[in-house]
Amino acid sequence: MTDQRYTELGQLGADTPLPNTPEEAVLERVANPCDAPYMIRFVCPEFTSICPVTGAPDFAHMVIDYVPRDWIVESKSLKLFMGAFRNHGAFHEACTTMIGQRLVKELDPQWLRIGGYWYPRGGIPIDVFFATGEAPAGVWVPDQGVPPYRGRG
Image 1 (cartoon, helix red, strand yellow):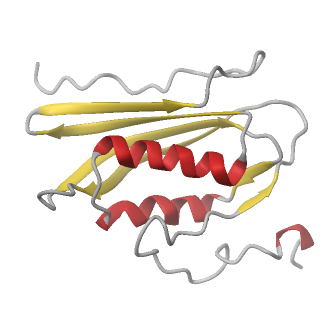
Image 2 (cartoon, rainbow, N blue to C red; image 1 turned 45 degrees about the horizontal axis):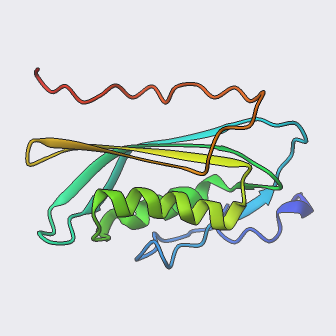
């Protein structure tokens, strides 16, 4: 028996191919099941995109934290959205902020932050952070838990 609240989800439970671009990806959402403030965390430790100049692959560990208002993101659609960056050419800053801004647009959360912890390119790691402001009072927001890149140093 299918729960009627989820009949509008087109990707969950379906054979859904990876979108060609992040812009084509459909982020689906469902009603927030909780009326108390709480935080949701998604971790994508194998995020990939490509350099817009050289076409070389770039790799990052992404951590997305948000406090929902009325909506939460459906996780399969988020996985497909994140996977759509695989052949997307953009600098680290553009990829990280694009993800955060798209989630804000689709979900209208009380608060959102994303940490993009990029692995070194040319010997220099780049960490990119985006947030919509301060976390709401009373919500437990743990550290993202990603240490600075040290290599062999």
